[in-house]
Length: 381
Ligand code: NZQ
Ligand code: ZN
Image 1: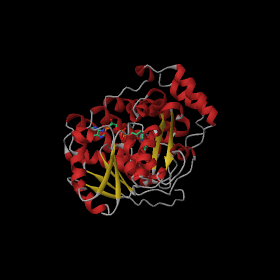
Image 2: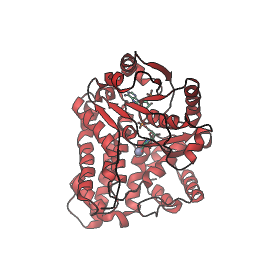
Image 3: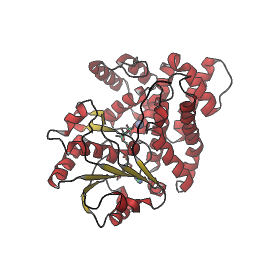
Image 4: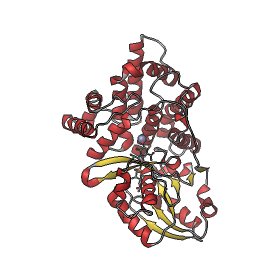
């Protein structure tokens, strides 16, 4: 196990009807800006619950943070927030609303363009306090300090790090209205978050390995149940917990991390607009295959413990594990090949070019550059 320092300050408030606790969690003298996406919260009653809980507070609303939040939209929120002298932010939505609000929370205390903060490449810790009401289990953004921000005009999408939310409210009932494609992408995103922190080398930490495998086993078990009945409270609660625990730092303690699949996936979203979790379902089996030499032992462990694959030569077990992973994504209703999305060689060449220009070295061994990313993508045509 590697050395580490761990501190996650987010207060998790989980369960039925917990949105009402907003009134006690946010001091009554704060000037709050509530941020939203495109309106799903108006249709499923979340908006009414939030407004009802905060009726004694001063609130301003900002609507329209889109999937893959763009700096172009967020600039408008920052302008409104500065005008209103906002000193507390409440993000109500999925990862995009929460991520976008993380950038707003830093930009409210910054005089220049918010995009500067994304490009700064360092964690920004001078921020306005932010809390969340999560409506889509997937990103873990409700319990981490990361965000991913897009710039539409240049088709770029980059990670940004700031402060953790003060608290996050998770009521599994709010997930009942999710479109099935978003559920599929949320499960795929969660699965691959775990893999980015697990599928590296064996023998670093028994306890982290089993946490990670436990989350993936849970996802494999509940995915068909969710497809059958998205209104099963306990199943949706397990989905929500899997997503939050998958990317709040817990399973990363003392172990190597990869993240190459995510970096390649972000480019597919930036260029083609594919939903984040979907890009991962396409790319991840390719990462497994192309990096099968360095990851082989861990792939075999994963195959055995997550999918019950126990026989065959090492190569056969690796092949079987990759095939089962691909099948799992397809069972969610996602395509797993670039060609199925009309994506081909020209996009691969563009991603190779971007990675070469940025001189990237992703993955636990720093060996995923433009050339290797190209191989991973060609494996998925
Ligand atoms: O905008 P509204 O109308 O609210 O609709 C949203 C949106 O269209 C809808 N939705 C959310 N909750 C709903 C609902 N519809 C009905 N009922 C509900 N309860 O779902 C759509 C997608 O929402 P979005 O927030 O974009 O999804 P997600 O949570 O998957 O977030 C994706 C973004 O997070 C980034 C991704 O790159 C992407 O930009 N990520 C953030 C991470 C982080 N902060 O740590 C890590 C991840 O790896 C990821 O990269
Ligand atoms: Zn992700």
